Every structure is written in C-alpha cells, then in structure tokens.
Length: 136
Length: 59
Picture 1 (cartoon, rainbow over the protein chains, first blue to last red):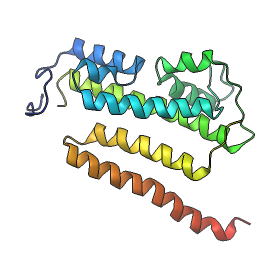
Picture 2: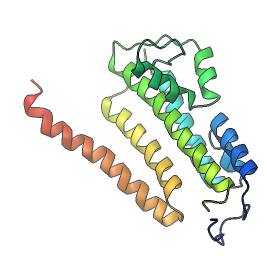
Picture 3: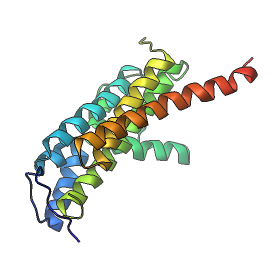
C-alpha cells in the first residue's frame, strides 16, 4: 500500500518494483545515490556525508577491511558488513592500508567501516521502500 | 600512526549513526532533529554511564 504523498516530497508519487530495485542498487553502490535518484536530496546528502565520513575514518584509523578469505563466522559477518559500503569497499581495499589492531584506534577503524556498510545497507533498503511506494 | 581518543571516536560514531537513523525513520525535519538529538545523547550518555558503572572494577 502506498502512503499519501506529502506536500514537501517532490518525487515520484507512485512507485514501481523496477524503480525500487534501481534505487536499492544505486544506494548500495554509492551512499545516498538511491535517494538522489528519487529526488530526496536532503536524505541523500545526509546519508552520503555520514556514511562516507565513517568509512573514511575507518580507513584513516587503519581498521581492518575484511576480505572473502574469512577464517571464522565473525570475519564473515565483518566481510558482509564491509561489502555493504558499496563502492567504498573496493576503494578501501585498493588503498592497501595495513591494519593495526594492536592499538585501540585500529579497532575503532574496523568497527567504523563495518558500521558504514551496515548503515549504507539500511539506507539502500530505505531507498527501495520509497521507490516501490511503500514509504513516502 | 593516526590517533583518536575513545571519546572522539564515540562522538563521531554517535553523530553519524544518529543522523542516518533519524533521516531513515522520521518524516519531518523537526522530528528528525529531535530524534537525532535524543539518539545522540543516548549513545554518548549511555557510554559514559556504563563507563562509570564499570569504573570500580577497572583496576
């Protein structure tokens, strides 16, 4: 069921499955792009700034960026969370930052990047809900 | 190697998570602001409270 279009929502009033999936994929690949596609400019800007800030802080603090060669289930969870950051994940991997988990900031960095990925997935699902018309 | 205090790291995380959750879950700007503020205070205040509760057994 699609909700009523608010007076301050300049975007698509009726959603479609294709628009929702497109918004999800765009939002997953680039934080905020899914909402920008749906003309939710403020949300797109806030999501872009907050998620990129968290991911950048994670890399700057020499956090661990997990890869597919996970040794245990917790590393798999970390890998899945990191993948949620979309295009930020390969960018972070290409920077070849050596993780330093012997100090607290490195541990914070690991959590920051994983949190950025998880929040980005949440935002991508939000874009999907708006695109399909389930949410205004 | 970069360094950051635990409090600064916590504040950065709380700010980013609060803003994202507020824009995700509240429809109007006023509600978003209040929700973000409440969430931010709960993140930071909760961590400080837990830190003080654990202080007696930290050494």
